Image 1 (cartoon, rainbow, N blue to C red):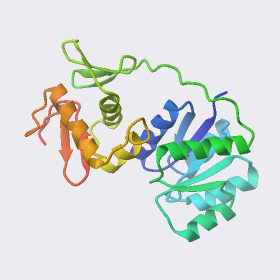
Image 2 (image 1 turned 90 degrees about the vertical axis):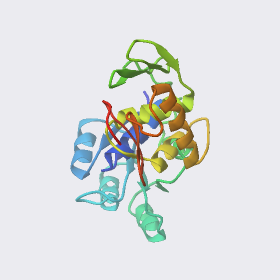
Image 3 (image 1 turned 180 degrees about the vertical axis):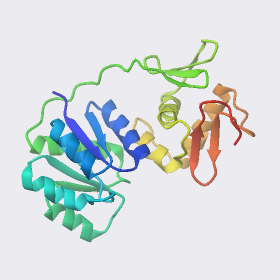
Image 4 (image 1 turned 30 degrees about the vertical axis):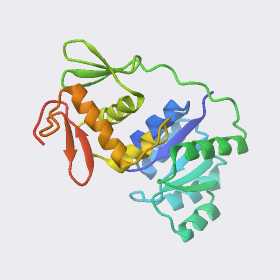
Length: 238
């Protein structure tokens, strides 16, 4: 049985990106956006660890941690943008097993999850996830998740590097939405490469060339000034 994680965060884009990365590491991940949805998920299924954001609409994460600990021995990791000592102490005193910020490297977060799983007695080997067979499509183009290639509207294949494929996959999952450079970097830096926000710009430039997108007036992979990038499903002006 693969370890089951419940990721509770009202930021849908961040939640989906983190869930996708954790799934690739062999975890079975479900998401919830608030206390009501979290309770519904926990009532309907079994989970080993809850990754719980503090800033939630309605009931906050600290209160939920205390609520969970009163009725369950489930593993709880507070995952938050806050770095204050007071919140860290409260989180641990109210029942959390660990407390990490959202700036933590993905590799460290995974190590902490696995360490917690061992502590609560779920230490079976983590199996590799099944192959993904669903392609991501946008405006006639698509990503083949098995071959890691970009498929042109005419059916041709364009090879992508791992960084290019991972970046385009994230943008596909958030098609039409602006994704911050820092969020892209946070996800990609947990893979087999490291870099800075300039690395994201370099990858985008290479992808634009492969997509035939004019870097001076891109119509497919658009720069959102002051934020990051947005992939559009059909050609549009910046």
